[in-house]
Image (cartoon, rainbow, N blue to C red; front, side, top):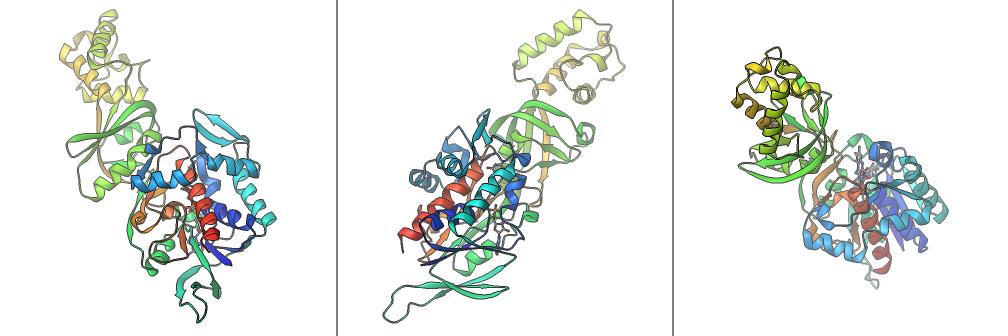
Length: 411
Ligand SMILES: Cc1cc2nc3c(=O)[nH]c(=O)nc-3n(C[C@H](O)[C@H](O)[C@H](O)COP(=O)(O)OP(=O)(O)OC[C@H]3O[C@@H](n4cnc5c(N)ncnc54)[C@H](O)[C@@H]3O)c2cc1C
């Protein structure tokens, strides 16, 4: 049996290694000039490969499908797979990294394993079409012709592991969606996810470069739909950082559907609104000779403090003794709820992943297409998106392993 895997990302390489270990003749086609390019950019060059929190609520998409996939290949399989290849992991607040904290270690062990087990790796080849061949007389086995810029080649099984449209400079240009479409599959509109959100608030520029811990709440139309806590990174165009990324898939989808999107920041989650107001009144009366510009020094970042003073209608140079109680209440209100109207999101170029992709209703939990026998999918190309924290690489590795195991079993 000959298997063709399209795409040398984590899912394609996990699939190819799984097949080659079982003595299957496997060819891996990659249109970039090297394998595993995206892995090198993961986790800020450190590769957050998985997480110690195995809760499947970190995945978004068809719940039944997601649960069936992890029933087949438990969450921890990614770490077991990589450990066997030589990766010793380090746990940082639940996020798992290679102990060396070098993403290159992960792509190196995959590359070396492919060589050891005899995967035929072909780089610099762009697969542009896949055709199903009719069963021959006296042989009911069907197959595929892979058409690339280097010619045509026949295979018994094909695994599409070509990734999404996110971060195209790493090679994932969305061509996998086209290949899937050519074989009859439906694609849920791919949209960026794990990306920064853009705001039209004029004060963004004043906050560029500031980082602050906050509870970030996403409002769509008129209700809060999800919150996350962590370090927000303010940019001249809007909001970034892990808690913003975690909510971004919902914000992007809502904006795509022309809904009203706002982000609310609670910059002082330790205190409720009344406690904070009381704290600020005490702070004011302890030294009323201070200027308004000094009032929040030591509590919030300077630029955030000055913005809040301004939003409360006060001047930096004004005296605290001259402020009204209602103005102190307003300061407290802005600290507990600094609201950003969200007008857009960063494009695929800067997004870490895509939401959308090949419809899960057309794929079994064994990764085989329900429409085309012998065709399998693996990784981010499938319409399932994970949270930040190693969930997307875990999805890629686990589904790659399943596709590899099943492409052999089901022959
Ligand atoms: C900056 C950044 C940081 C990230 N950090 C993390 C992290 O720390 N933890 C985490 O879990 N996830 C992270 N991710 C997400 C994670 O990298 C992806 O979810 C994962 O790489 C998807 O794996 P994949 O194998 O499905 O696709 P990809 O890694 O995208 O691989 C697909 C491969 O297919 C090739 N290809 C595409 N089309 C064709 C074609 N027609 N012919 C031949 N080859 C083709 C591409 O060149 C590419 O090499 C990050 C992503 C980015 C962009």
